[in-house]
Amino acid sequence: MRTLVLNAGYEPLAVISFKRALLLVMNDRATIIERVEDSPVWGTSSVFDRPAVILLSRYVRVPTTYDVPVTRRGVLRRDGFRCGYCAKPAATIDHVMPRSRGGADSWENLVACCLRCNNVKSDRTPHEMGWELRFIPQPPRGTQWTVRGTERAEPAWAPYLSAAAA
Image 1 (cartoon, one colour):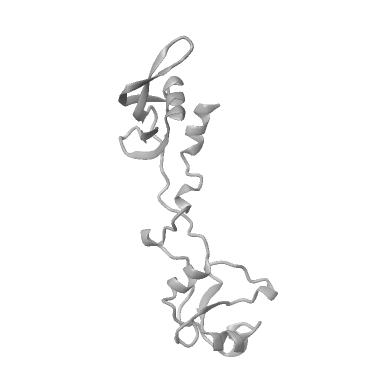
Image 2 (cartoon, one colour):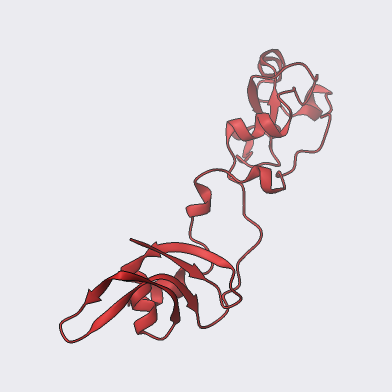
């Protein structure tokens, strides 16, 4: 059985197990808003309502920005599957500052690149080749860049919920 956790402002935060929700309620970190009537939780000395929805006692600030992880597919998508040098269809990615010279795997150092440009450029910089990038590489922004699975990464309010278990 799962329990919905609401922030003090009644905005949904997470869905957690009823055991974890019961711990929050027992430690006075939350109150039960909605109960499951049919199945109470039996303890050794008392009976507890099984929570379906709980409300946190204190407001938890939820971060609004997430760092999008750098992936090959993400770089190609950000650049519209077009080469950063010649604008032809791109199938590979290129390090603007080559890794052999200390270039990082970051949004600012990776661009989509066609196979021809990638092979010609090799381990040189665009400046050494006399090439110019069509745009300045930047990290993507917006909700469409939220990668499935990263929303399970440790959110800012998770320690608050974990503290109840301790």
